[in-house]
Amino acid sequence: MTITTVISAILITLALIFYTIGVWSERISRYLKVWHIASFWTGFIFDVSGTWAMGKLSEDPFNIFDFHTLSGQLALWLMFIHAIWATFVVINGGESIRKKFHKYSLAVWLIWLIPYFGGMIMGMSN
Image (cartoon, rainbow, N blue to C red; front, side, top):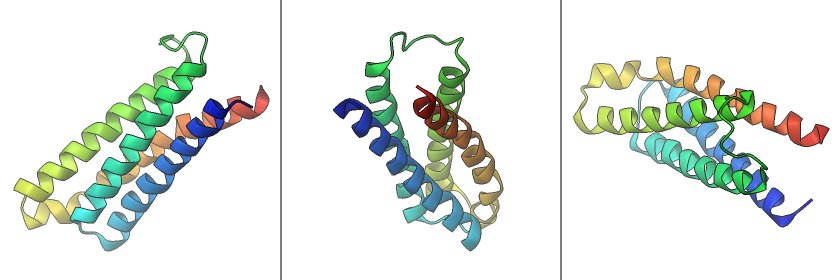
């Protein structure tokens, strides 16, 4: 196992930790707070960093027809949109939308888990 593999796995796992904390704490509190947004953005940054590092290991990092690559890109874009939307809601949104925001966070998180666990399974099988 190369150092790049270890670093990328750590980064992606940190993404999982921060994003999970943000999503579930926001869902449990049923109210979007500033620190939830910080957790979303931190998870996103770790995910982008880990994805970049893993791309360095891939023979064909731009193969968009690979399920893992496609689902990973979808998850990254959804995380990005989710973090932007959360930021907008806190800055410009009213109380009612801050209370309803949690309904959408879980869907994004569940979609994000597909490439996370898929990548883990692929890594263990190689």
